[in-house]
Image (cartoon, rainbow, N blue to C red):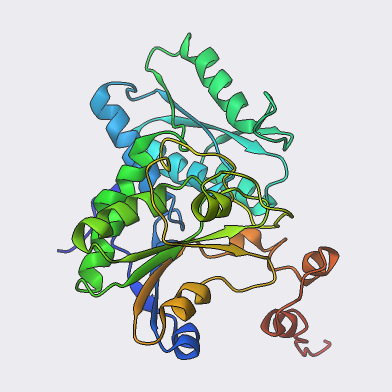
Length: 322
């Protein structure tokens, strides 16, 4: 019988999907790593698993203990699922501006939520600082330990992609991957995958797609982590400082991507026809239905509504009166 040994064992080994329209437009082979097929439906299941399993090895947490994290959503969902499977409770500090779909899913996974105002990282009441202070406070009275996951600084986040995502991409492409590109939230995916692929193929090209208002484009393009002008409606990506995870990573092709533009094509166009490029399909997108996939929200932000979205939201279903 072939079966995964529970939720934790089911994380990873996601397929690569040929993105046919992007491939045809660039004359490259564009492959998306289908991370939405993880149990928690996002790429963040991988670091969630690694962070908790490594903490167990170090004796930082025991069954009945508490996992605390500050997160915009997907990491919290992954942590809650893994924590439940391993016998822990979960407390998540989240900016109140995050989508309702994410908050609902976190609660469905059994996490307790603490919602805080969305303020810059420089503010002591930024959700990341609140999460750390809360973990320190709770640690004094938790006999089975409190793990502050600390995804931005915890190198187990990066390790998760070095030991799983990177090797999977290499094996699935049979070593014929020419480029890899993704956005940066914590940087774990980019850092872990880039480190692994470069060990296997020195000339692999690493790209980053950075939203406006974040600082990674300027870091890799000009050597200084400085926020680019403007902002973005994207959630869960956009890093404003150099973290432990990102401090030694080299990016060959940084791109500043406005909300109006589709992401995966820039690297393919720069490299030219005939290359194989892998990107990350981070989640289903259903957790942004009230925002990114809501025509009214897009219009309010002055953004174009894709024809396919407009068409689907205007479908009239006939019915018979009885």
